[in-house]
Image 1 (cartoon, rainbow, N blue to C red):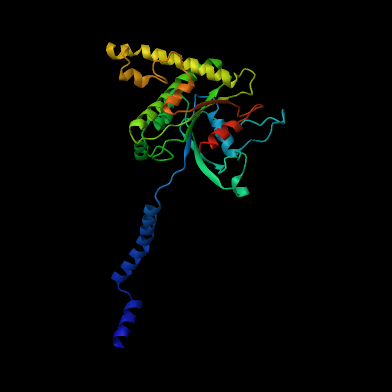
Image 2: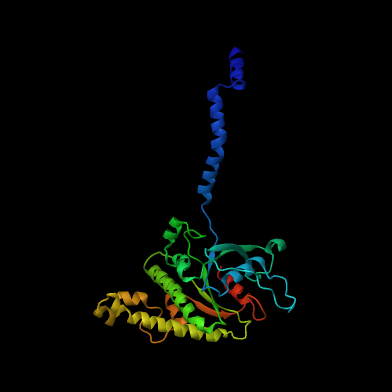
Length: 311
């Protein structure tokens, strides 16, 4: 009986050592439990879609429209949605969006309110200024391990599911500048796909060229935007190929199609004219679809459907 009494007294009158052990258990147990559960479930990340293109093409306006939905209609034209106020992006920004599992939902639908099963993804807007384009190109050219180590991607260790390249279809003179940026994007994807053939690297990434501002009278139709970009890309390819002798590459490599020239050649090597269809050699699908973020016209539904089909 005396032993039991002593034990009860010790339990209800703890020493400083027992008290310290109890506090340590209370503090460390949640941390240990979180660590165990984290190791068991692993890290999951949302798939991402990269939004790129030159400044002023309408990338941020498109991101805002997908995130917030159409704004109230204007008083001048009741059928025309008002433009969301945007600004020139200086840093990448991402928003979380969702599509229904059957891929039939619109960006206007509130999937939470309807209780529909949804698949979430990140839409990442990147700056279009020439000095800031490395934000987008680094995500396309870096390997999955590089992205995971740097932590610069919203989906660590994973390449984007797709790329949406927004171009101003109403600015015919701007197609040259847009083509220069698009050349770098496609070449990065081509090199990524070529590396995946010889290693267990990331696979190919499809590209949507979104010909924006078709609500304007001066806008080119999607077919002319496509042919104009293909022509400019072919010209750039030819110009860069001729510049190789001045870059220190040997004449035998240039004449025989050396590794330096082949690595910088976009599309089918040695072809006279460039077409987006040549990118299929590397598994890179390129579609050109017209639309408009504001005003009257085809809208953005085809762009949303294209994205939803690839999530």
